[in-house]
Image 1: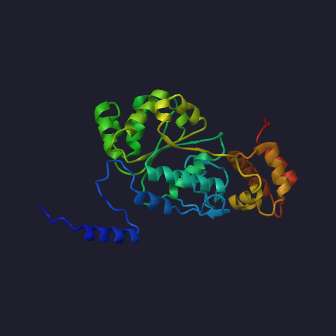
Image 2: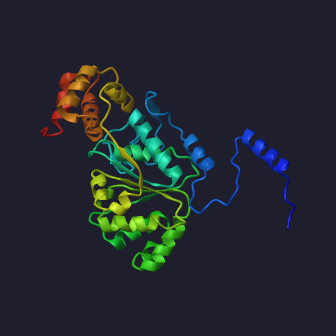
Image 3: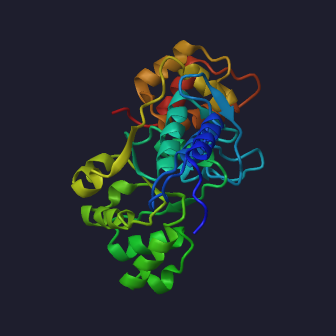
Length: 324
């Protein structure tokens, strides 16, 4: 047996580590326990400013799903499942996106379960994709596709495929599939399920059982319009959700500024005209504003020196159909 340190030596070591800001390890950490240092490092490495500190334009990365769309050569009309129909749009980090980054970062660091909800079209997927993109590069992100009215084999296959496992040979073999999923989820990372409102309570309970495994180190992020109501019908999972984050509509006070950053077609437009379109048609809905931007852009390219004014905006809004 090794020599036992004296009390004075132990006290000296404790004082030294306290001055260095370290944590004295008196026991082996339990499995699946969040280490304070790792938790703080993940939060500290988030690259976006805190909520409420103004606006910033985040350059679009063609290799990362985000809200940016095609460039002048036409790289495609959508990114990350979000269709915007307009070239030259940028991801704008509003205070709402910053709050999403903070919520997703906390959930990922704590290896918990998060629920992102809000009305259709308010920009949930855009904000989540941006938040996942801004996580430290060493945090892997797995995106699973939720089909319409999926059954257990379909969800199992989606999870296996997202985690890079053999979905074809395992999706209909329950025990081997569960073992493979359990082993994969022992790695820290984030599993993102969009349109999670399509999941039935038994499928949500299936996810809960996966995350109840002692060795699970991954975070689970469920996103969708109405997903909070679906989770409410699965009380066992609901009690385990760490983070609930509601995505609001666009900030009315900074709407004109946000749109000018989103696309340069809005630069110099009278804020009163923007306010009219929002009060009449868009009502703070991100997807609706993307459509309006698409039509304003098309109408502004009809000729030279076409001014984006109230009549042109009214014409663009009319193309969206009747306002309900």
